[in-house]
Image (cartoon, rainbow, N blue to C red; front, side, top):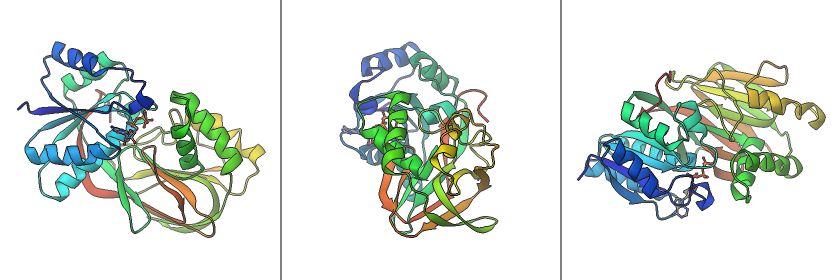
Length: 307
Ligand SMILES: Nc1ncnc2c1ncn2[C@@H]1O[C@H](COP(=O)(O)OP(=O)(O)OP(=O)(O)O)[C@@H](O)[C@H]1O
């Protein structure tokens, strides 16, 4: 048995893979990285696979897929730690639509460059977030969201488009279907406040939605989430010009609230909102959204220069 296992999602990027398994294996072999291989067989399978691989003694897990596959691997690694199986480090070869986590961690989408990152073997113990509604919890590494940002993710995932255009399509659809700003009670490390929210993103990494830099001042191991809130009952004509700002990470604006916190709870009244972790929808209609940094960390092979 090799010490390293490659977990390959053939259904990332809606099956239109940037890198085939053969290409990935060839590139790894050229870099003298020997691996065993496993395929994900259904949504959620990478969680079970990773947990089992750690239990079986693999020390390095390389996932080939998008942010959803990375999210499943993170959940498997945390569950393995919770069960006392030990831990393994995680390498990522981006092969999905958005690759926001790779962007935050300086792991390029180009195959050779991503393999070079694994070869360079630069490790960071990253924070892990937890999101849920009090009864259900899912771990995340890049970010989670409640409201229209999660609705955008959902519409992007079920559209026929790929990459950033799919998120722009999701944005247009969400504007027509999900544009509401319910009054939210928000509690965080430093107190409570109420405001109407359009979207609330709790970020561990920098970017979500294939290009929205909602946490330009993120730090992956500071024990805090960078929260970005947009709402306050502003009309759509005032909200739309914020889009370029959110893409560029220019959050210094009176209609954008940012804060850093280890824990945040949101409650709304009436019809629920979408919520997501790492781009995967967790609820299509929730009235409670709890996020926090959890006690578990994951040993990530990150790009050089990642802080
Ligand atoms: N064998 C499989 N059959 C169907 N779906 C699968 C299979 N294996 C994994 N999946 C699911 O494929 C979905 C998409 O994968 P992933 O999120 O990695 O790619 P992506 O959507 O292209 O990337 P991103 O999240 O970066 O936009 C995930 O929800 C995952 O659970």
